[in-house]
Image (cartoon, one colour):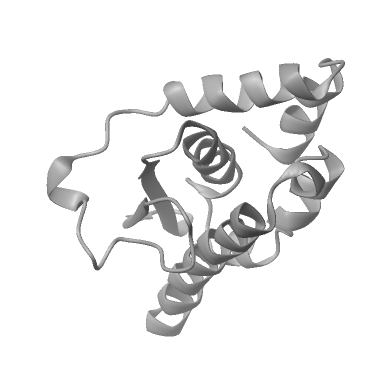
Length: 140
């Protein structure tokens, strides 16, 4: 999913209940997260809910691509994880660092409808993903 597809999907939804339901549905569509990956090392600090993110580096002809897996114990946050992974997973470190994920969340109106705790958690997730991208670039 790219940002424009995501924005187009959300523009079709009339009210916030529909948008929240859509976010939750996106979270339900995430593949199962391995229990073995539910570790402190993979846990995102700064989230009120429990959130885990795992990064896998894939090397191909276009260079390094980062693929992410994630999960949360809260339905709405799991949906936010799904949106975030849709915007970042399968992209190069450069693409990730050049993407303003929070601006996309603002454009679809999600950031303004999150509690302060969830907004902080979202920023923590984004920073974790950007940290993986920076590390991949530094090691290249």
